[in-house]
Image (tube, rainbow, N blue to C red; front, side, top):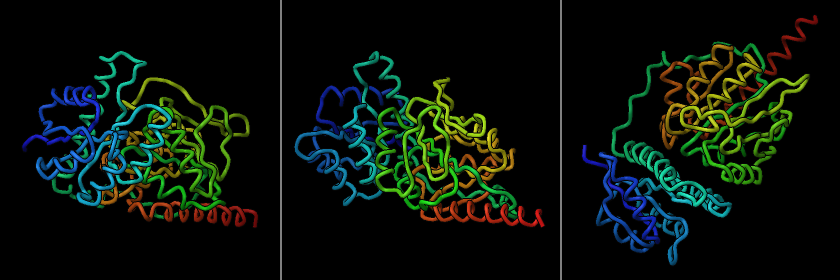
Amino acid sequence: MPPIQVLIVDDSVVVRRLLCDALASAPDIKVAGTASNGAIALARIPQLNPDIITLDIEMPGLDGIQTLLEIRKLYPKLPVIMCSTLTERGAAITLEALSAGASDYVTKPSNTSSLANAMDQLRQELVAKITSLAGRRRSSPAPMPAISAVKRTASVDHAIDILAIGTSTGGPNALGEVIPQLPQDLPVPVVVVQHMPPLFTRMLADRLNSRSRLSVREAEAGKPLEPGQVWIAPGDYHMTVVRNGLQTVLELNQDSPENSCRPAVDVLFRSVARTYGPNVLAVVMTGMGSDGARGAAFIREAGGEVFVQDEASSVVWGMPGAVVHSQCANKICPLPEISQVIVRRVSAGRTQASLGARTARV
């Protein structure tokens, strides 16, 4: 297969050179061309026919958001990776870009770390995302796993006491569809790992909170878990849940990354399995890689359940696909149905548990 063709769009000649250098060592990727602003980029797309675009957010004239909107009108399936700064403004505009149809994002090297380390991190992240996003577009859809790979629950015989969600690439939009649809009286707490850097997770929590009936906040160590609350792991921190007397509280740590991620879904899923046993419902949504698959196995071994987003509605089916292929999924759901199946399962489990308690008293 020929190399993936990339169009780099950035008004800074220095950044264009950095991105070209970052991709130069990837044998399966070729920089087809560059553009210094949005207007030039739109003119070059039909000339170069790129497989994917990296797009600067802040540019004079036609800025990144405006350019993205035009690309989505003309080329709705063309993957676009936004290049953002690690600032509060950069985080806010990046989330706006993701809502407007961007496939993913990377953060530009900052002045706070060594250029060599920053470039190495950028190279790894950018190559992986280009390969995943553009590779999916150029390849035929993978066959669905055999039905035996999905372990369905025969009956609802226990309550759900916590909802744990893990996601990555495409996750902000997926969370934006699921969390606001959950009812205000949801009787369980919700804990979320979304692979994002610091600042971005707080901005994501604020954005979801403004659109949701539940309280959505970035996690803080020591906060007790209560029904109707949604806690999002902060960037660069693993999030766990632990018993503290009669309460269950959040803990944060900066232990080594897992699956090259911090926060990692596996870390959260292991902790909810240890703390809540069979009373866990986990949901793994769109994302690159396999983070969450090992944690899903812990949840299943403890008697909990795992639902995953289907391939057709995922930006990247890496994470949910890994759970399915490891035979740890109870159910595969299209994104528009996930909030409904969550509510049904949580409600059914509590109704069944209540009936069982009344029967026992009789």
